[in-house]
Length: 114
Length: 112
Image (cartoon, rainbow over all chains, first blue to last red; front, side):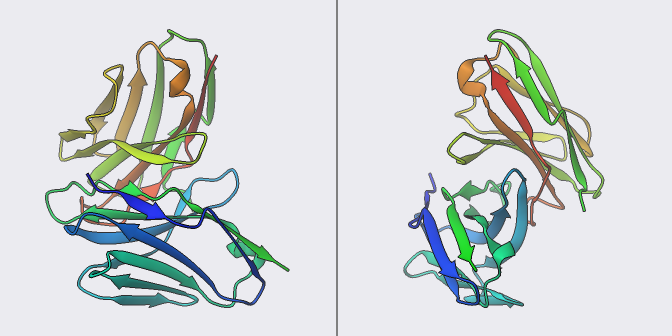
């Protein structure tokens, strides 16, 4: 089955710097890649997603890049703020017929230091 | 703003007991899910329920069973809990099985 790996368990950046969180996946049939944020003691909050028909998607300070050849996708956060500190999860699922079965990475704990 | 509601927030029980968790979504979504998040924060899909069709993750033990009265509700029952069932159980919903999933606040289960 699909495996999604997040290669950084933790990431520390200074406030105002950029942060990049990387994920890889194994199943070439995967076509939907969402990102979720989990703050301490809270549930998952959807932040941004990308589908395989594009290779880049931006929403304000967030950009997702998708490299289908390398089976890699990444979340870029610019001008980081302390409130960006959280665990970020990437996920992948296949297209129609897969019932949106999301396979999650293990999470990257982002710390934004003042 | 929460639109996927879960009860209880927290539940402590003993090995062998039966527990039931509730999930309700007010988003009008057609598809609902249950996920398990363990102590290491690892997330795994347990069930998805779409138009009365249940998709089961084959790794889920038989003591777990989802129950749905309508498309806005998907409950989770665990018969005879075991220590490894201690985790946070997260409910989610989406419009269709291809859309963004929105998560509830979770139910934390502790099995003594």
